[in-house]
Image (cartoon, rainbow, N blue to C red):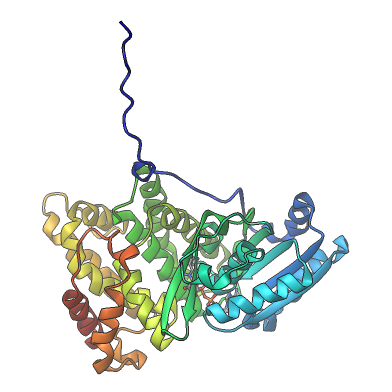
Length: 399
Ligand SMILES: NC(=O)c1ccc[n+]([C@@H]2O[C@H](COP(=O)([O-])OP(=O)(O)OC[C@H]3O[C@@H](n4cnc5c(N)ncnc54)[C@H](O)[C@@H]3O)[C@@H](O)[C@H]2O)c1
């Protein structure tokens, strides 16, 4: 009589996968080795993607100078100013197709990097509108991609997301695919030295949001928590120095680690309600991503912190706010207080009214945020539309 083995049922969605780009090079002056990486990947024609601000401060020319000895056919796309829209992405893809580039180098903050990696992933896609609307998934990337961040914030160089504004619907939407990971990420703190204090503050707190939200996320794993924990610890020790003395290379270096580590955690555990509530502010009012996250974070955690008390105790300890092991109920208050004080210390806006948001628009914003299921379902507390509205109202008054 033969024994039949019963195979357990396997559902891939139950597994916890972990992704990183093919290769990450981190270090002071690492950007000077860009030409080596281009040679290794054997590109023929290159499009360099960046934004107008970085072109103005000379970063784009510096990259062209670094690549000049390779004698490659290089074109530039620097039409990005502000956070990118799907229309702008379509322009970028069109430019790359006409040039027939087989490599994209993206240098900039999250805005330029998102355009660069999505352009690389979609350059050979026939139906762009289906991919933009999320009805069709992004398949394999046929164009090589190298990314160099110039802000310490989004971690876009190691994430599988790229975020764009839908101008017609006044919302922001994320593309998500493994094809959005670059072949190489070169993270060089020197590139962030020219970042103005406001961008340093907003993008730095954005990185902290990635760490904190992914730490408490439903999809968090011991592996992602390890990255997020280190990011939070380094953030607390370095953000004031990086904002108040932008030339402090050691503080810039530590903030580059914060952004990278938080980005890896975000890429694999995802973020939650803070980002869900920030998207409509970006879509309708064009509030910068980092500013929106920084402002909403204390108000969102005031509500959701009660359902992740253990993590609040841990986070309070990472931030040196005290040991709340024996009175965990007080940890959330300490964390929320720290997050709110951070806004003042870093001269970031402390209320939605300060950002010109109209009070009568709050219900519409709450409706839009309540539809961002991908992020809300990753939050350890089920927020209703009414609770989201209440959070916006508190943030509107800054209380
Ligand atoms: N892909 C992801 O995983 C992810 C995650 C979070 C946010 N984002 C997206 O990233 C964007 C925000 O990116 P960001 O916060 O890095 O800002 P950003 O890229 O929009 O840049 C902000 C401003 O800072 C300037 N700047 C950047 N680096 C500079 C430098 N070194 N010196 C001088 N000026 C500099 C830019 O020219 C720009 O004017 C948003 O569109 C957001 O939705 C993406």
